[in-house]
Length: 520
Image 1 (cartoon, rainbow, N blue to C red):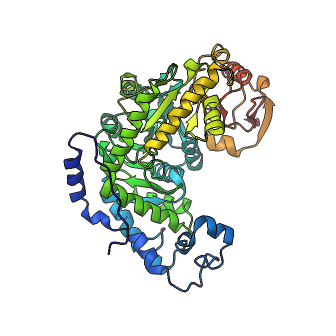
Image 2 (cartoon, rainbow, N blue to C red):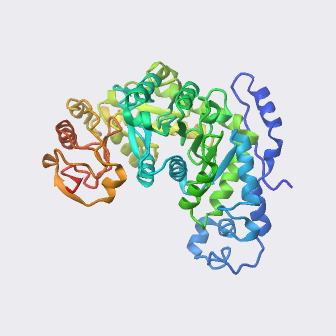
Image 3 (cartoon, helix red, strand yellow):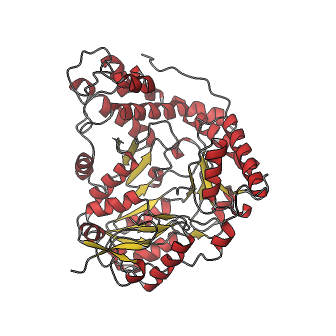
């Protein structure tokens, strides 16, 4: 039964893309099914005496109905027998997850309704016991820190490469990781290595040789591939982590492919990861009242990629490359392309991530983001001291690209005419070098769960931090919970506090005080 409307697709511009597309689609005829959506259609007219209380929209607030529509409320069901149950799937959810695993090349795939953070929490808890070590890059997403806290684990840090001109961290060089694994006592004892690939800015590494090295030491390779679920569907994109041999991979299906926000995948492959522990961790962390709107969106996004992925991603790449080329025609703006792969810690670039560097204008990325939003009605993905980042998806149009280019030209004019003050140069003069990684005196869980006190920054020397402190640039945490506060750390944070930009993590974002573990 064909219940899903199809849509026209423009001709792909990649050489031989037509042949590749036909071969891809012929291998995925079974992927036309959408088991969860089919079940929701079949359930639509059922008389309901179960949660949720709005009863398929009949009792919904009119304002909510006018915004979300009848179909959203009708599809907002719970885990009754006819609709399967996420914790113990046996029907439409099981079938949908199996189709996703087949498409991505996993042995097993879980549908996550609490974001990629939930997927990361699940795989870390499944891999580690209380007190175990895990190797992680210093520039992790905060969800990885929270997973380590939940697991009661100890992090062994490895520093990523860093681009001083662009002002952000890249990947971890393979030689740096190997040195860490051979010389860091915590890394030597670690059960797993967790890498972030690609980075937020789209830089990526080839993980195959890293995976072999990690497995040769009897360790698991876990990958936060939140920003790479589309890699599987186009030959011009970086190598997917599953294809490289990773044991578990967390992907955000809402970040560039078409699932709803908070809908993600967790992929498992190979014999190394304990499947029973994965299932148990998933059940510990996942709501027993999973949103079927999120589940249905995962089902639909999987089908869309299976049937049209190469074409859709090709469209996004072409739009992104057009934007990149035009941005580089605007004086004082720079948008890196594949040349970034010559940098340490980078083997490839996801071209759909477009980083626009504004530092030569003499303004910060924060100023650029604010201007584009408030004056031009354009919201970018994020900004930092030197850059703004935009994600180009197949949902964007040439009109969107034109609007952004118009906004960037207007931004430059606003700087030239003094409408936007040039604040960057003064800030740049005082950015210090990163302090050394401090000693980890307590496991992060003990540091955040113990008694704590708030002390002035200049009196924090020798205390153990009870919170994380991240500064931009470089987007690398200066302090993690459990680390001893050194003089170098205090000096660095004192300078950053005066500059007053890009502080994330501490409860007191002015850095006047720090939260520290009380002396035992």
